[in-house]
Image 1 (cartoon, rainbow, N blue to C red):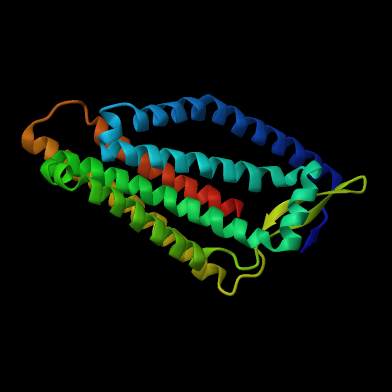
Image 2 (image 1 turned 45 degrees about the vertical axis):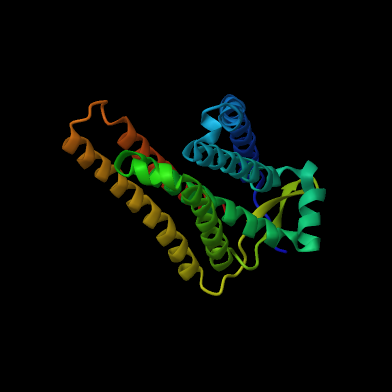
Length: 249
């Protein structure tokens, strides 16, 4: 693995930034996920929600969001703390760091594809409600299955083959770790493929929002367009998440 040296001034600023970043991430997680997970639990256990496959899909997508949050916190943010060197040295020495990269990319793609599946199910509820009621179970499992398979395929293609946690010396004989993608055979190709997948989901979700706008005008529904706005927010947030995730890797 690679060893990186930096000036003391740079390391001091980086250490402060890391602390603020981790504290902010933990605070946001504590402020949002406990309540969200409780809601997902109630959805999966309370009639009539537990018999609605769209609600089940929303709950599963929410759990995947939580797993992405944990993965980012543990395997990206915490790598810069010397007290956890034993853990990241273990990942490097056993070759598990590559498994971490594959798992992280798989969760990321699964997150955005499940968001797309939720958007499609919401669209079907508006324009093809009878189809959703008749084949809700099939659509539910197809949404999960297709999302999972595509996530694994995209992850295997795009993850950094030589990913590891490079040592970065922080002074006083101490070192920490930072995610290092290594030398990729075609860094531009991998990046463009990842960008293409996320961009496709972004554009399709925006198209779904536009379709719902048109449907509302056709049947003269009111409500201020909350469904469409929700789809647009999901599309934008997932696309921004892609940029942050790949940048961190």
